[in-house]
Image 1 (cartoon, rainbow, N blue to C red):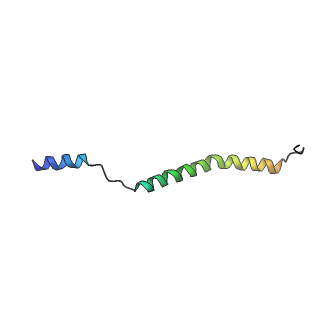
Image 2 (image 1 turned 90 degrees about the horizontal axis):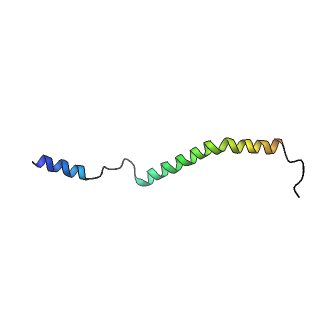
Image 3 (image 1 turned 120 degrees about the vertical axis):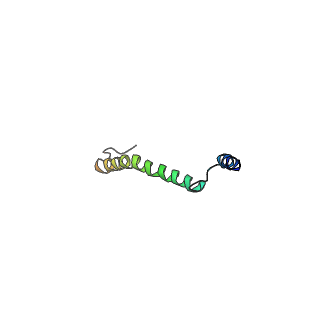
Length: 61
């Protein structure tokens, strides 16, 4: 009988985290930063290239 109570107590406890909460948040934020760089990096480089290659011919008034 004591075996069934031990398993029910073990099932009621939450599993321990593999990483701390701050480490999980840090991994998520760094992943968002890297993916944003992959998305916006080529776009920004094309815009900068076009600005340098084809400057405005008329001055802004």
